[in-house]
Image 1 (cartoon, rainbow, N blue to C red):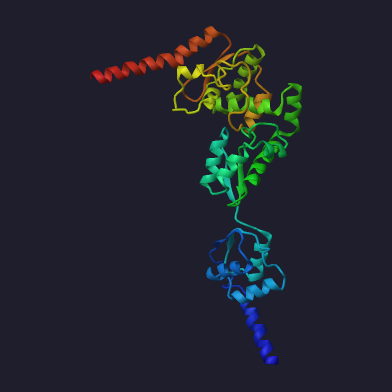
Image 2: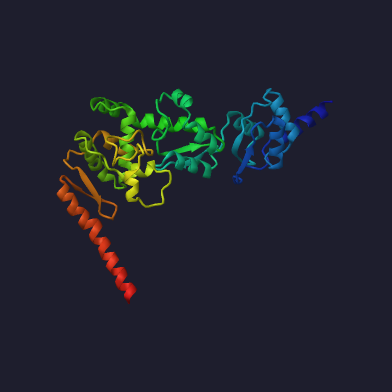
Length: 336
């Protein structure tokens, strides 16, 4: 009996030891434990992946701790040098593989949903539904019809299959972290709500990709708002179009959309994308400048003007003359 007991003990020790030696470290496996898996099913997966020596020994290890059905689903990075108790501890703690997900500045809710879907982070349909669900939005402490502009653009780490509500909460938390007491105090001094700041910052974000121009763009919009001049921002018009073919047309500037800032005075009704930290600050700390106009130089930067006459000269220089030259060049080439 003693010999049998010793033999059984040795077998158990063998069964609960790592499959391979730790040196050199073996390659890791990405193992998926599906949602709703039982402990027995998890043991089957681990045995099939050659990560445990014995299925029954792993089941015995779990039963001694009464942990059946307590393991968490998800992707796990495991290797054969891990003892079964280490693997079990990882499954119980839910230490799943996290994937970096970058949300670029200026992305709309629709674009964010595409990023999440491409990386299999969450259900894009559930995400799209929740970001426009007023009762859910209210639970986040936000009074808005949608979360457009409230999902902060940065790099997050998510497990595959994360619930949409948890992804959304993480991004809203990112906004609260970026907002901070300094920006809140400045918004209070300017008598602006968070919604108004996000709206203005999102327009600034869309108007320029040059970071050192954002305070100047902000100055133009603040000056126009103060003088009750329409913002006349093309990105807001585009956001309000049911479909955009890549070119803004004259008829678009006459559309009845509330986002048509050529017709509607003041800010549009809400953000047109997710502004980054720089645009948030620019909206609250604009440059001290008298500019009322800006026009693209066609190189990623803009020419700023304080008067309409100066602006018209800049439009002639940077927009109309180059177009005429291209048109003449096209005719010459065609004639040749």
